[in-house]
Amino acid sequence: MNFDTRMVPSVKSALHNFIVVVKDEDKIIGYVYSNISPKEAYSNAFATFFDLSSVNRENVGCLSQFYIKEEYRQYGVGSKLFHMSMEWLQQFDEVDDYFIYVSNGNNDALEFYKRKGFSVSHEILDGFITVLRKSR
Ligand SMILES: CC(C)(COP(=O)(O)OP(=O)(O)OC[C@H]1O[C@@H](n2cnc3c(N)ncnc32)[C@H](O)[C@@H]1OP(=O)(O)O)[C@@H](O)C(=O)NCCC(=O)NCCS
Image (cartoon, rainbow, N blue to C red):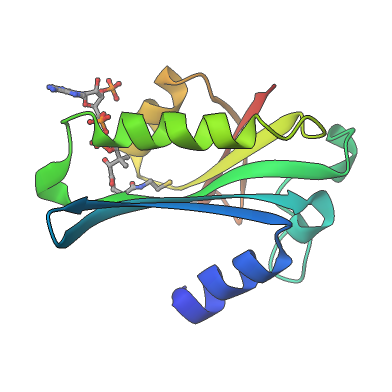
């Protein structure tokens, strides 16, 4: 997974994209990327990310990528970006379902999202990815 295989296809298949970049003066120290996409974007040759029939609406929201440089963690920056993303996602009235995908073993992120109201839905790719989900 790299910029060309993950970010570019994701931005292209999405209907709306939202990226927030955080800087400490001139230095970039983190970012969050969220999007609104047709639910069909989550069923492809690579994987079926969730049961499409469990989503009533045409489009879904996703907090897709999230990273804060290690030395800047635990100061509330991630929480701020998380809330900015949720506010952005929730302005789309036609979307009721939000997803986050967490790699197996990334318990810190998993617990972070759970404390913020997301629940584990299921695992995909032989348990390599945990799917977290939240309804409007
Ligand atoms: C997940 C991630 C983005 C969170 O960013 P962050 O800036 O550390 O997030 P916050 O500081 O807002 O919150 C982290 C924890 O620190 C706590 N915290 C926030 N401010 C704090 C402070 N001033 N003092 C002590 N703890 C604090 C928060 O309560 C939170 O704890 P919680 O998880 O129990 O709620 C960051 O850990 C990261 O980049 N991880 C690596 C990449 C990754 O896993 N991304 C997710 C992929 S799905």
